[in-house]
Length: 198
Image: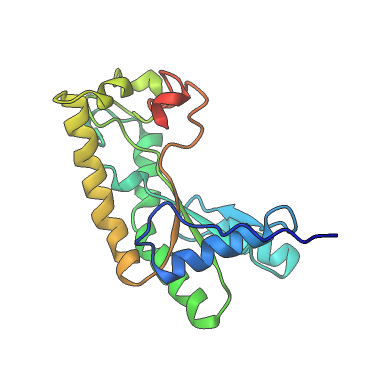
C-alpha cells in the first residue's frame, strides 16, 4: 500500500510567530484524535476553574477570557445594573489572562488561551449593546467605504489590537473569537446573517 505524503499545513498569516505555528500544528495533530478540554471564565477569580480542580483534580488545557469590559463604547448612562456588574466583573481580565499564560509557559503546561469579545455596539447602543435588541448597528454598513459604521468598527478594532499586542510582544498565541455565534441573530454582528460576520 502506497503511503500518501502528509499535507503541509500553514497559517493564514505568513508572519505568524513560531509559537502560533506550534499551536496551529498541535491543534492540527490532535484534531479527530483527542479532546481538548476548555472552560470560559466568567469573572477574574475564575470560580469555574476552582470548581473543576476540586472535582477532578485537574484544570482544562484551554482557558477562555472575556474582553467585553474593554469595548470602547459602553454606554454607562443607559445601562442596567446587570450590565454594569458584568462589565465591572470583567475589568482586568487581560492582566489575569496574561499572568495565566505566562505561568503556563513557565511550567511547560502548554495551556491554550482564548478570548471572546462581547463587543458593545460601535455606534449608538444602550445597555448590553452587543445584543441586537439594544442597538440599531447594521454590520453590513461596515463593508461599505466611508460609512460611520465602518469608521467606528475599525476604531474599536484598533483599540482591541493594542490590547492584544501585549500578548504578541510576549509571543503568547491567542485563539480570538470576536464574532462568535454569528449564525444567530441575537448579536449585532449576526443580525444580518452569518456571511456578514465572515
